[in-house]
Image 1 (cartoon, rainbow, N blue to C red):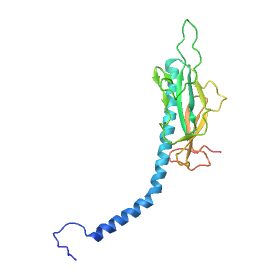
Image 2 (cartoon, one colour; image 1 turned 90 degrees about the horizontal axis):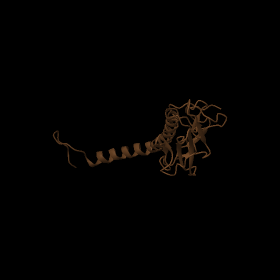
Image 3 (cartoon, rainbow, N blue to C red; image 1 turned 30 degrees about the vertical axis):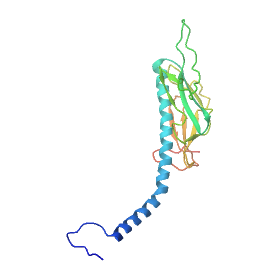
Amino acid sequence: MHRRTPGSAGFTLIELMVTLGVLAIVLVAAAPSFADFLDRYRLRGAVDDVVSVISDARAASVKTDRDVNISLGGANTSAWCLGANAAVDPSGGNPASPAEACDCTDATQCLVGGERMAVDVGQEGEVSVDSLATTINFNSKLGLKTNPMNPSSATFTSPRGKYDLRVTVNVLGQASVCTPADKPGIAGIASCGT
């Protein structure tokens, strides 16, 4: 065995093996926590994108003086998309017609103020939504929901299914996010209550 002298630098094979062993134990212990972090991160990203489209569409309805329709679409609840569509410009002195739902799977649709406003299919990875039947209409004058009695909410589920976030649009057209009472909480997001 070789003895270290005060001026020699480096590690012995035993020191290196002990260090790698400790590192392996730390990584194995941290893996579930990291997977849980990624699950929450993907869900928060998807919900933030949805809330952003809803808020931008509401603001655009007032700015462009056109009704705007927002609808979920896609092949199924795992391959979903969300798009906003403004009413077409009026012609011949006629009032503007109501906004029609757009097909968010078509990259040429979902236009508000001449710009595409959508969360595309597959953009949010494996985050799923509870239903594709959610439709929201904003009026052009105040950005209020034109169908206040129609419940406007959708629940999004994380890729591993552990976490849910519910996006709700109130009568004033404002989007809010909460965690359903039967699911684990996420930091910074209030519980939906009962």
